[in-house]
Length: 486
Image (spheres, rainbow, N blue to C red):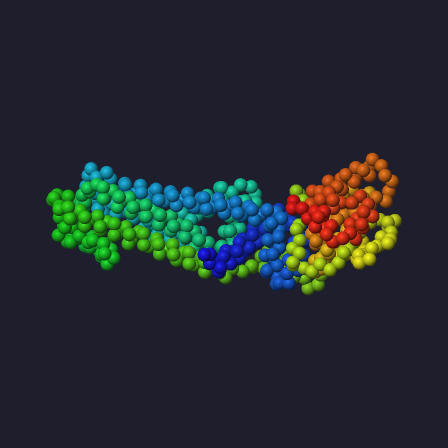
């Protein structure tokens, strides 16, 4: 059964990771059109930092950044799995190289150096790295994993994922521990592979063990072997007696029991001086990573965040100009969460209508609210804020079909449509009918279709739109398909 606390920590980290990825993206390629997302975030009635995370989530869903992070996460897991398999194979190779094929006696100390030498140096380097103020120091295997994930990333947004991850972890002082956990995990698999291989070949072949020297005395090997075997012996591993150590000079024939003692001593040294320290390092790194991330918080003073305060946590609502939409951005009607806000009205709204079109429409049916005509940015913000607080059950949007549908108008219609349970568009043509007006009408239908308005939700005159607005409620269930997932 999943741990609810662990799930909450993971969800919180993903939210901060998305926010950091979006911050880097906007820093590199400019701010995104975010009026709708800012408005939705402000409606949550939370503080500035939670609104930052909400804005990032809404924009990430719109720009498909959450999918980019998901793909990168899968690629990073594949890279980690590759490193773990490589570590396992390296450990098996080290065991085979240290013991050989059994055709000749094994130099016990050289075998121990072959199995533990590189690991000991790497482990000491990791410990000494804590004297260096760097989150990248001491875990070259972890850095290799991070480098490999960058190579696997495809596209500019995918390349931001590991960079955002590294910067987020660095600010929490958790990057060192995460990279350390990766490094220790690879070493743990390497030692498990080496030990499994040693147990297999020592069980299947007869090996002889000895020590050889030209300069050192036998007493030196007795002291060194006893010192190294002391800790393993506390855990139950065999320890050769001083007599057997002296006799293992390669010049005397030893009993089979001596070979068994040397095998147990070698395996015990690999476990105690290789596997257990790496397991301890792995456990400590995972614990510290989790502890550092538990206090994850948004640094609202960072560039890209501080500039959003006036938009997400304004002291008073402003009517400043929204940033321009980025290339390739397609406005679309989003499904409305009908449980989130109360729906209290049926309404009609004009969008930049010319003065020769009388408004409100004559003989407006009873129970229909007139929201007026949007002609300015301040009116736009007022209407959007009103609909954000109280959505319309049905909303009819009247547009001047004699004008060419530009991206800003379509974006406004999409945003308004997202704030109603059911929204239709009525195209009003005050001018003369002709080939040009038909072309513009076709352009309106095409743009509205791309934005998510179904064909049934677009009327070619105001009267048919008003008939829909005043029609029975069950019409919405049977025939209305306004909110189409893009």
